[in-house]
Amino acid sequence: MSSLTLDKTDLRILAELQKNGRLTNVELAERVALSPSPCLRRLKQLEESGVIKQYVALLDPGRIGLGLQAFVRVMLEKRGNAHIQSFVDAVQQWPEVTHCYAMTGEMDYLLQVYFEDLEHFSRFVMDELLSHPGVIDVKSSFVLKELKRTTAMPLSHLRP
Image (cartoon, rainbow, N blue to C red; front, side, top):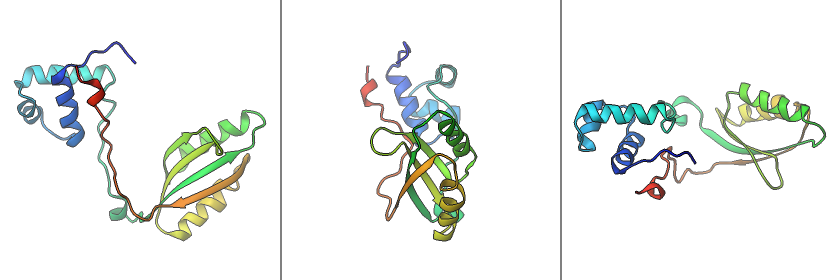
């Protein structure tokens, strides 16, 4: 971890922005009990230090026609790094993949993916995953119900 020290006010700023990244500086300052100028200075410091990576709009997958969510576990052939790098490069090009993690255990990668329907999923698996050199096994699990979704990082361990 970096040597950056976050105080209570920094943590309040981060908590508020994780709830609503579109707050104006004046609204943010009000919520964290600062005047706008010091609030903006702190915000810029959090951005420049890399604590705040970026600002995004979070979309509802169902509302944009992506009603099928799955987690796909992928195993690659273990000989040579060529298959690994080729797979990593391919994942970057597949818009259906929103998250990809290199994993310990039985499978090598875990993909979080979104599709319009089962047919779209089937095309992706058959045309992209299983046809990719080095992929030797694929196992999928479909999401039946989402119980929690958040992008907010826990901050309680940073309490000064």
